[in-house]
Image: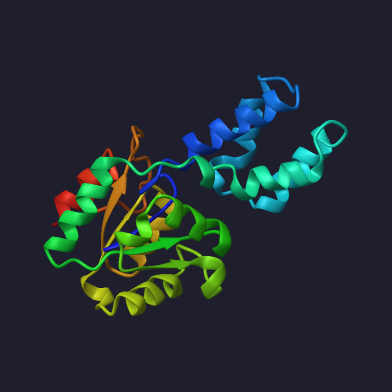
Length: 209
């Protein structure tokens, strides 16, 4: 079971939104800029350096660059809470003999902080971060690395994630079963599709097991 981290196992966007709102209030910046930053961040898919540069350009005279970098490095990680339903589903998967490996794009220090702060390190068998292995989803290499950590056959793996491109397209290219976590969205890709669609990760895990 290869499971995405951000906005799949954890609600990264809500945590980041909360951190940004506090940042704006603390520095006396317009609360209406919250939407601009969230759009710029694009759910974490915009490169950190790009987001940082844009924010420094906009706020550099008011908020120190170090504060902006701290927000981007630690803001979401410090506010994340693992949903009880997700924890229970991971425990149930372990009881059924499933190997659970997190597969995530991002920087190692930041992603591992999220994993440990939420207690996911005690609920999974391991994780792979793109920076550490030098490959990003949807590339096949990161999925192969995850299977190696889990000491399981990749051919029998299920991929669970919220990103059509990074998670589902990656799974389809490898011929793997997948579950797309919709988070209330509608599937819009015509070129490929997931094996299953669920609204949240806990339901996805329970459906697989």
